[in-house]
Image 1: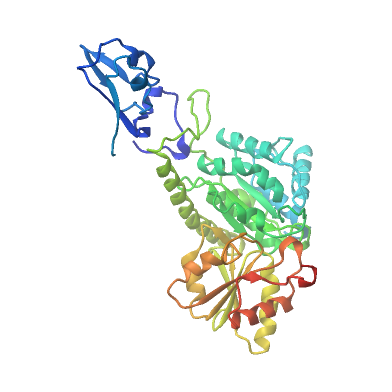
Image 2: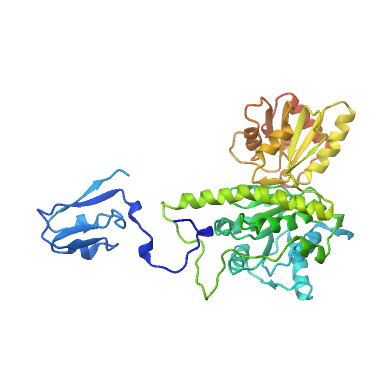
Length: 85
Length: 386
């Protein structure tokens, strides 16, 4: 994307602003433990968690690594792993 | 036409001739006469502009920023504490790439309170992304306004600029000054064509937030544009010289530098005193010269290095202090950097702060200190009151 002079932007969607680069820790789910309750999907402030045919997926373009999903998972199925970029 | 005119009024005339569509400024000593005169122009119908009265300098530059973003040519002026109150917006204007021109009648910063001249105000904001021009006399500072607008509005530049001149020493001094006609300036400075502008039919936001993935690149681009501003200032200065006979194609001006052994580097009105002191020193066999910096941002390092080649000592006269720094002044380290590897000794001399007079004898004394290798110091301290 070429930068627009003066950081000017036309109206758009928040989805144009990917927030994944803010992340230090990334969530990793253990599907052996996951009970598919949907708490992580409900609580994610970036709507970066989804359920795809019984598989929990994290959209790393948007996940900020806040860890709310891991903290609130009733089955303790999500770990926050430090990633190197 | 050549007229005897107060510096501030000459600046106001220059601003008027540039046909700003919006003027917003808050009066502060020693800039007050400029905006008073501009208000008169608007009230009398001599300038077709919106003169927007505000309650502070922060508001003044905010109004200017909004007006510029809406596509207008904009002018403001301030000094000292006023510029400090604007500081937040000063950085935003550059980041949003709005080519606002603002006159700075240089004045000391408090505390202690001082209305007198030094260059601390503008130099303190040297990193904001505005280009800086410094005038030696009323004619030069008047002409620099035309050049500033022309350079700022180039689409490969689109950056704001300060036109700085020493408060009282220049702003309140009457000198003969050649004020161009409106027709001449219209031929030199075409109407402003904005690159981005606020338009309800094509909505746009400026200065949006940039994530860590993008912010550095925006800063890089602003720096690159400021480097290009140097070329644009030089080109506009050359064109101005061809039209009006006063050439500003270079960012520095050399005075008796041909065989100089000790060179002064300075900005602004002090250069006139230095030139007279150099004439006296030359008569006494002292090989002194001056390199005056007209464009301080972008810093003309290559031009300075060429101008100073061959000297043994450089004395940078600093009407500012970078408190807590090793060299004391803000300009000296950059001059020293420009001369890296040449073996030339560079010293800063903080002098003339808060309006203290700088006389020819002081210039001679500073040259003697530089010859002895004594520098990076306050010059002219009254030790009896310390």
